[in-house]
Length: 481
Image 1 (tube, rainbow, N blue to C red):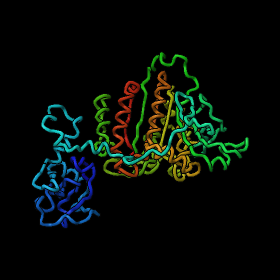
Image 2 (cartoon, helix red, strand yellow):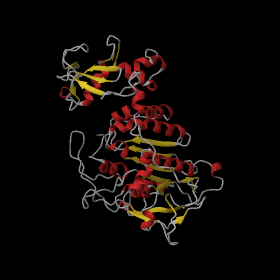
Image 3 (cartoon, rainbow, N blue to C red):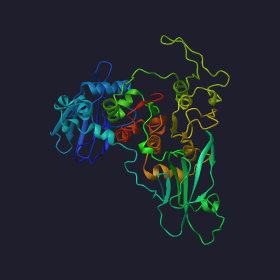
Image 4 (cartoon, rainbow, N blue to C red):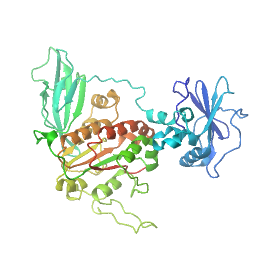
């Protein structure tokens, strides 16, 4: 996979990809330019065949299917391309017009933030071919058109009706949880501007009034559900004991602790996928990278138990780098039931006087999936779990709601999480805080989607740098892939 921005005239599109019959050369074919490169043989850092680029005797006619890349691993091929391969760009109409540069030059020139000015002076924008810009601007919502028009708004803890038509009636209710899989719905209330929900997750729904409506009609009735045109979830951090002069209260003496976890992202992929964020964390917060940390098991649960509970849920076999360990939950398989009785890290921070928060963006939690039921009570002061149950769990969601909160607004599932975290930071400037923001959907099923999130993460840390200044922050993953 080669990520670059096509030159002017190609309309930011590559029409097709072609490789020759012996898999030695490849070309990305645009409307005006062809981007050609040799497929390397990583074992000896040479190409599979010494054929030249252009003109070619073997036609570039084989459609892109399974590309064996000389039977080498993909990561090795990236390394070889980075080291010494040449990218050549040919004008389709005038092939004698050629621009060439090494992949190393293109990458260095594109990642200007990571190099000092002296080193950057030897490269130009033309040399870089817009490589990093194309990576960062990739988004699954590139052609997305917003289909949801907001009819309700939650602002500064108050609900407002945005749809001003006379025949519209909107309602709201609070959502909480009794356990990780049990959603508790509060009573429905007709929405009046300025209503103050005393909860973190609020559901709103709107419908046009009908002449035949009964006076007792509520959103729980089928006739309401079948004709509702709007259904949405708002999330906030509701604080019951807010001081009158909150902005003037002194900051806590204890530092905050924040865990930002992106599921299924290796250290090497974070270098490729979120370079701006990594650079900002390193330069502004003096971040230190730990490239050699390793997982202790497959998938999320065993690793989550290890660093959040201090428990192993599977045996760790004896090896040259480990003495071997038996797991800590022998009587109840891999679930470690009665989680409330374990040393969950959030409980320790609560005991130390911290305000705590967790958000995840998946229907299952790190401790609850398959046969595991998770917590039987709310494990933190502010828990976004009702949001995910209502949006994603098959027992509670609806197509209308699921579309409204994500795709209908052309936004990622992590956006409500970061908005929730931002509100948490603002509501407790006088208290030490511990948070876990676990992002599952972003990169779990598609590695390409990490790239477009870089700008969002970078802007979040930059815009909230003052609030995060007295903090220990862990930007990490549960495992790679």
